[in-house]
Image (cartoon, rainbow, N blue to C red; front, top):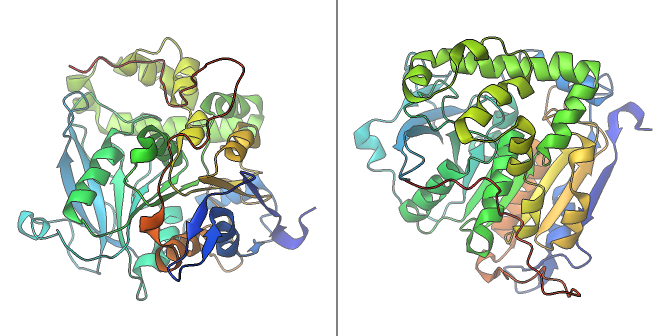
Length: 423
């Protein structure tokens, strides 16, 4: 029983967590850093279960006032063409660009051309959840301590294509394994800010994309660490859980399906121009899995939405991660459900730690007074990694998790069934 909103905290990890060297020459490990970064989880006792926590997100609040400048990036991949937008957290401004989210304005070409720097400020690249964007309140709560009140971090948010009032300019839409845009941003940031340690943070669907990306990059990942919050991990399991209950199907799946349908409708002209989607059939969609059946299977060639869910899931990708990686999940999350969390995979990979709370809902963790608990372990972990840990001493070992087996076998955790033939 979790009395008065006091959630239980647990860590799932390898028996031999990744050893980390402190800047003073002493050693610690990834688990100790995660434990030291995690404060007690005291939530609002009136929001006493995951459904109430999650539904409370519908109560409108202003959230921290983060200001952004937006840059439109041209995709540098010959297959994944089109454009996408990145919003950079900046000092407060009074500029207004009609059609963009609040407190967001475009960079001028002249100002963006001067953005490169040799400074060594830590930089965080953020991925939002399904149909969201840089304006999301859960996201702004998480990054506010890093950029407001003297925070020394540089932060940018990669908006999924068509989200946050961005345009759709090709037939390449985002999906749960769409790692190409974040890959381009990481490469761009590494070249533009050669001395900055790069980190990444993902929420919900963005957490799934980030986990897939970090796994795909493996020992060559240019990030110094990553955090995945509210990751659904196994999308097929999460989808079946949504359809199993009245709230799951008639509230969560219906709302998410409606939000995705609105997104398609917003970009109707571009969708009709660049894709072979059946727009009329999409108008008949009610639930999220129906949307994925009409859009993701048609766009990418999956035979069913369940095949798409299995292929896009990030649970196996956990095994391929070779940078310090923290996942934060609530066990009562009604969307990224308990059954989908890959506990065993976290015990097999010393580069990863899973932090679970018994309460919190989906990207909620509401505290008394309106704060969001998840912001504290996120910021504490990032700041400890930067201030205490010798990041240059972390040397990824591609073979660290190989096991002795009876047969000569190879298990590739990021091999996909869907192979896209690059044009």
